[in-house]
Length: 128
Image (tube, rainbow, N blue to C red; front, side, top):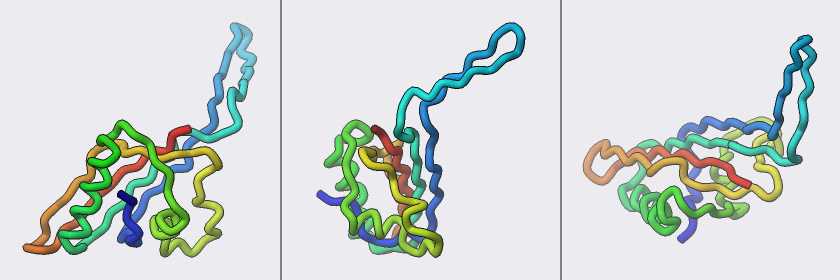
């Protein structure tokens, strides 16, 4: 089962950070060591407002197919383009680094707005 190709109503994106360890000596000198070349803990919060219940159910189906928060997955080009759809800046600024997979940070939140219409919130975490 594939992730949705709907463009979200809103998105929050955090590019994560690189693995850095800071050491401080008694004299106050600081040494920082970079322990990797890839970002980690990228996070995307997506909200899909007022979508048909069938579309909302597809989020639940994808979540269940990944055993909840257990299994990571790759986004296809179409899925990534949809997630970042509506971004007017440079598309490359929001693309995940090479080698990053995504997993659900928590279960999707499905809110029934009116019969047949729902709002879905999804939080994805980038993992290496």
